[in-house]
Length: 322
Image 1 (cartoon, helix red, strand yellow):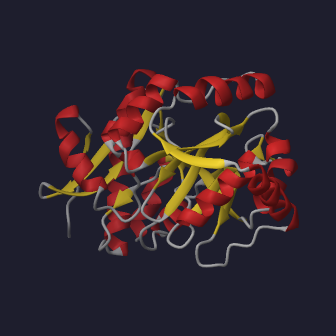
Image 2 (cartoon, helix red, strand yellow):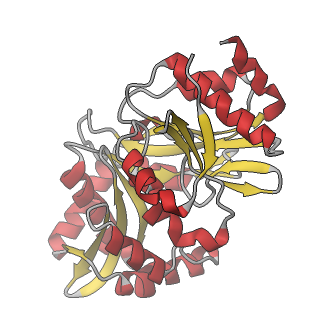
């Protein structure tokens, strides 16, 4: 029978961690330490590494609050990250070892933010079976809208009409590396005016991340007669392109600048990538923003869900039956 060891991540292990992330079947660049570390001052990191005979077999990006562990709250998703060739019985043994480590360290609750399936490199549903066996409680479900690359890209009549307006006006799309104009002139004022909030990432943080991951973080801006009208920041995964930020100026409805920007991104990536428009849920998934959902559906996006779970660790012994 295999024996697994669990330890907390230490900075000296960063290179090993990053190498593992590059091999895992259910990981994206958001789990790279160079991405996770940009907000290390905001979280008590409690990421875990599972090994067998000194070979890495799994990692859990996580942080600690009180006596609870969370799928890292600075990331959009999480869960137990494993190698592609893992056997089901080994997954459950690894999950059990991880839970026993947490119990030994006086952790009472494990809160997991599941990875949406579109990001998986191969089937990775072992987690849901482990959650079922440990009688985990689902605490939240968010609805995301995604253009599936396996289906034709079919914007509706309203979007086609808007795209014609943008074409007639001569909107131009540029890929750029300087984030200042979009952040200061479009995104931040828009968020402050509409919602009274700032972007999750500061301009300095986004600039730092974009420099660290130039192939993974992209900025596209839309211009009319040289004036910036809309922009979007993309997170580019192996099989998914995600709109991390998108925003337009007050006249975006008249110029259709945001419409043509979304259309450009979909046309560019759709043959090989799912295009994720992000979350349309509010109030922990109990409400759907209908206007936002319609906007995204008008580009042909279809719904997927992201689920959140809580395991009371006294239930972890139920995995022993496996």
